[in-house]
Length: 455
Ligand code: GDP
Ligand code: IMO
Ligand code: MG
Image 1: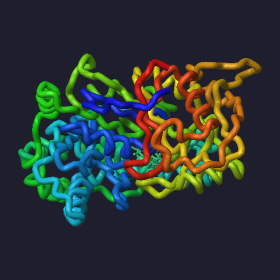
Image 2: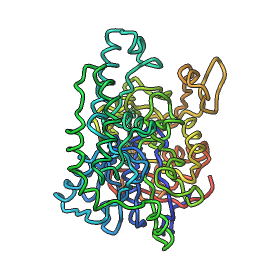
Image 3: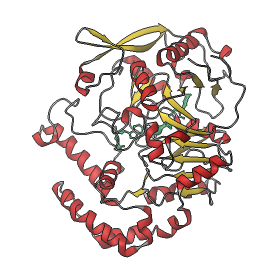
Image 4: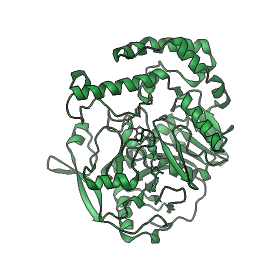
């Protein structure tokens, strides 16, 4: 590892969560946006919570791309994003109240799907029913251990799953539908004829087409100002040498295909999703940066092999401030899982790794890493292909020496304690991807940038 000297343009770079979300993607995007003309969200919606701390101010973005604090940066929501119009508008207004005018720097794909009030109601109703069923042991709710058979996913209840389900079933409502009220009415009639039946099943009142139509049409003028072809914009920006950042939400292990299904989100956070969700081809991508914490966290239900259930886990929660940006829930914490990270490197084709929150590990006598799982007396170096095996596998934890020094002021490798460098070397060697960023604090400036020498 060596400190970086060349910090020029980013080309077209994808920034993806390499764990279960909340890796610090927002901070990295904000940092890199200085070198980009365009930042594009390509999937997810306001289930995301991306935190940026700059000059003593904290911002939490749910929909607006994390490059917005840089005045010269255009922020786009690609076709793969699901948009709750009220949330987007509130975010735009909230920024204005803090003196940041997004003006014409926002671009929205007309093909992005809209999260409607009935999607939020259905997400909420399903989670509530699943939780109630687990308490009472109702068979239809998935009885028993809140593990593999748990019916509750612990979603953010923002309507994400139902909206993507409607998109895939071709019952969805897209941004461009707002520009044709009669067409929108027919879309809503199709959607609500089924959704109201589902809502009734959960004891929820149905939605009237007229009310939903009126509510949606109230956003038509707002969107008219911002719609454009996002793929074309990326193409043109890149052609004139302007950097483009594709900002992933959630993380690899929450991916609908490559995550720990069914405890996943309903979109494709992986780097492959960046192309489909923004409208560019895979040959255009120059860099794929995977973001991972120096330990691991997860919010909501699902397998988490390196989870700590002891005082060390509690210390990680406290020192790392591990409470959700979107829902405020306590995040489950554990040691870094290199088996899962190797898989993330492969699935995303990572060219670089950003390791965040190294500062949180200061003061631990030992720092754990997991390089292998154990299953039926055998040691596994690769993530199990079968979900059932993942539940049965246990993480083999190796304890490396910790360090007591505060690393938050470090800006170059030689300012890090030897034990911290040893941990980073171990991650790099084990994952086989060069570490190019090291986060040592919340602030934009609290980062070390390294040259991308082959791992
Ligand atoms: P995201 O969803 O991936 O953007 O991550 P979140 O914003 O949900 O959660 C990451 C949290 O860690 C935020 O509070 C960040 O401000 C914070 N953070 C990011 N990088 C670092 C770091 O290197 N050190 C510390 N202490 N905090 C960090
Ligand atoms: P960012 O972008 C962490 C989790 C939820 C739940 C599962 C499904 O901030 O990293 P959903 O509402 O998407 O249907 O919930 O996914 N989840 C996240 N966990 N960070 C996120 O986003 C998440 N977005 C969703 O907790 O387990
Ligand atoms: Mg987050």
